[in-house]
Image (tube, rainbow, N blue to C red; front, side, top):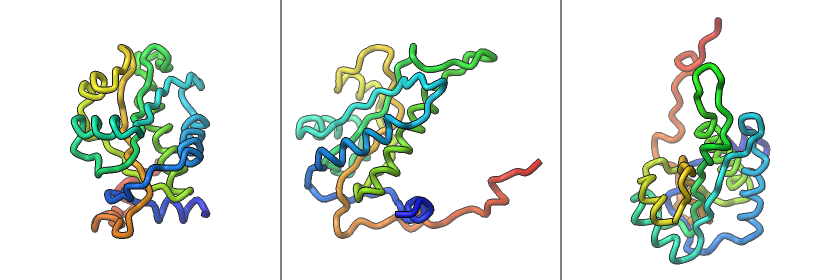
Length: 170
């Protein structure tokens, strides 16, 4: 698919088939995240692939926004590996994890795997439930699967503010 068609047609999928995602599709999605740019290319991302029946069930205790997806990827970053800006010490970790998540989200759409980027989750519950080591920070949850026949974007999906509201030229 052409890139602009992909980003125009992609939407947050909230209705999935129960079918497991093929391992080759998971690998393609993970490869896209692996190729994503990060601050100084430090690659602090850590991705937890939650695909076993047990992990998918445990996920439901950490977020109500699981949409009964058969798989999810919890994108985190390792604090001590993220680049830091020298002027104020700001870490690139959240930005790095977000770029990785975006790459994976678009790669998934390109191969026919629907996703929803979820930020509504309890990070401490994720850490304890999935035994995430200290210093690894959960940032984004990408729930995913093959779209069900009734999957469709929410009504407001295609409503865009005018670019003049969001872009400033100087």
